[in-house]
Amino acid sequence: MPTPPHLADLALTTARPEDFDATYDVALRAFQEEAPDEAREFDRKVLAGERLFGFTTGGRWVSTFGAFARSVTVPGGAALPAAAVTVVTVLASFRRRGLLTAMMREHLQDSARRGEPLSVLWASESGIYGRFGYGQAAPRARLSGRTRSLAFRPDVDLGDGSVDEIEREEFLAVAPAINNALIPARPGSLDRPEKFWPMAVYDLSFARDGATSLRYVVHYDRNGTVDGYTTYRVKDDGDITGPAGEVRIGEVKALNPAAYAALWRYLLDLDLVRTFRCGNAPLDAPLRHLAADPRAIHTEVLDGIYLRVVDVPAALRARSYATEVDLVIEVTDPILEHNNGRFALRAGEDGATVRRARRRPDLSLGIRELGAVYLGGPRLAELHAAGLVVEHRPGAVAAASTAFGGGVAPHCSDNF
Image (cartoon, rainbow, N blue to C red; front, side, top):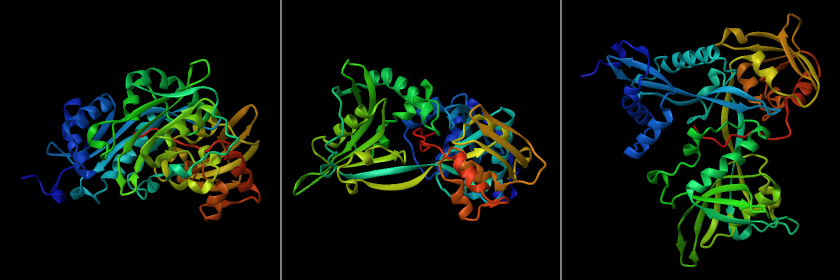
């Protein structure tokens, strides 16, 4: 019999390669999931060589915490090193014992030592990570509707190229170049080395929910060069009136508006399909402006990635600002002591400088709020209106809100 949880001697332990199956079983149990062997082997390859640790007792794993070394695009196009957090679990019988807090502290301190100014994650439960300083930084849109109702405006340019479906290997030979070209323009984007492309086109049979295998589509310009791509699968359905399938759309990425519009038109005009759903689109997705009837698109705003600033000066220096700004910002961080204090931020056309300051702050906020506004998504003025940011000098919130804002909505299309 295992030691009862209240008597267990718990130790924070770094996982070795031979510990993978034990940690994987803990993660499945904590997420209330089951997975076939093909999923286990897929995840083994993805997690190989990455950071993974957790608590053990008597050789038994009872919690897990992992992180990938990635980079995140910040406003201005710079790629900032970041820890992409994954497989955060605690067995139900070991909850309320401080394990998650201890693992989070270990992760953030380790990330600081590694020189990663940011930490990002997707939250299985949205109420968990705010207390550790993660702000909801890049909301996403879920788009859906009836395909036959979604005609485009007559002035939409579909270009003079063409759209075609290709095989997976052909797709993986051309899609990365397009994705890489778009990454600097979209705050919140993660780099996607070759190792992570299988995650972007995840297509194990057990996870298809009764739909087809993933299909791969590209757009060719008039010269035959690929300038856009998308992926989709179809869930078959029907009733007495005929076919009623649903097209489930992955990411739609294109180097120009005509390619983007043509890819969407292809998806919406598929035979035997009557509805569409795209679960992870940016809030400023152009599709909503192409529709002749905007009400034909149902838009739900959901939480996307959560961001945690690990190194305040490095993070503030790395991004650009929409206007010139000269402010002293007071930050409170209950976990990382080096982030506490007042920081003089001065930014303009030549970049940003950040230094410690002694003078009275213009505004004060917590590390969670700084993470929320860092990518230019939620406006700092919104958080001030909610009572989460304190203004000490009149006009400081308005100035900071404008400066931190951006012209492109932050978005992350990578799951991890």
